[in-house]
Image (cartoon, rainbow, N blue to C red; front, side, top):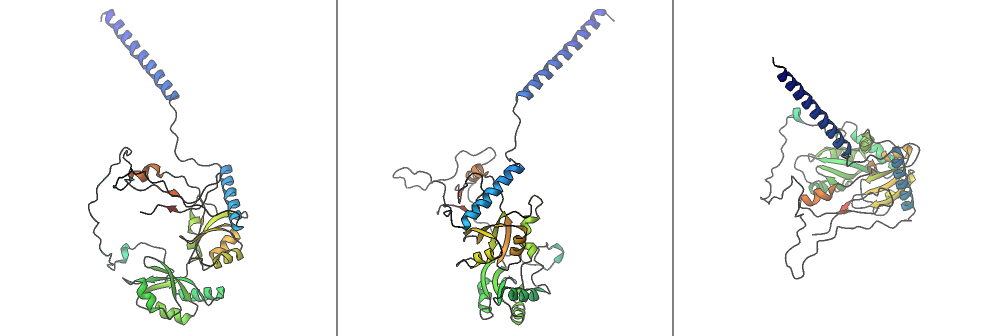
Length: 334
C-alpha cells in the first residue's frame, strides 16, 4: 500500500477527532451559559410555610375580635368602549397563546336522562353507604339528643326522579326542614324521634337518610401533604350545613373552642383557628358539613382565562404580606 495513502488517512482521522473535540467544547460552553429552566411552581420552605400559617392565624384572630374590616369584592376592570359605539365589549383575547384557537357556537348539546339499568357490577363506590344504613336512624336519634334541640342536621337522598319541592310538601308536617341540596342529596333539619324518622325513610320518594360521618367531614386531611393540627392553632375553613343568619353557629363554634374569623354567607364558610382537640370536637358537631385546611394557592389563570373567552376575575379579599385570605371568585354582572 502506498505510504501517501496511509498518511492521508491518518491526517483525516486526526482532523475528524479534532473537530469532534472542538464541537464538544462549544456545546459545553453553550450549555453552561444557557440559564436552567425553572418550574413555575415554587415550593415554600418549612420556614416560609410556618410564617404563612402564623400570619393566617393572626389575621383570623383579629377578625374574631372585629379588628379588621370585611374584604372588598373587586372585579377586573371592564374594557373601555369607544364613545358612541353600540357594540358590546368583546372580552376575548385577540392574541392567543400557541396551540389555542377560538371556536364558534354550534348549538346546545343534546341531553338525556341518565337511567339506572340495574347492573350493580359497574357501580362506583360513592362513599355514601351511611345513607340508609341499618344504624342510620339510631345515630340520628342520638345526635339530636346530644344537641338538646330535639332535632339535628342530616341528609336525605331522593329516589329516582323525585324533586326537592315535591318531597318538601310530603314531609312538611313531619318536623323536616330542607335547608339545601346537591343533586339528589338534601341537607335537612331532621326530627329526633325514631318513629318519625322511620316513616320518612319508608317513603317511596326517599332512597335513604342519615348523619354525615366524622371521617367524611375531615376528608380533606387525608391528603398526605396535609398535616393535621397539633397543639398549636391551625387555620381552617369550616363549612356549615345551613346559613348562619343570626350568628348562632358562630357562637356554637366558639363554645367548642375555635377562634372564629370572618364568615362568607355565599358558601356558608367560616375561617377559624383550631387545635387537634378542637378539630375533633367540630367534626362531631351536626351543624358542621366539612373542615378543610387553608392552603396557599398561586393563580395561573392570567393566560388560560382570556384564551377560553371568559371575563378575567379578581379573587375576593386582599392579602396582607404572605397571609392567605380565603376567598371566592367574583365576576362583574353581565
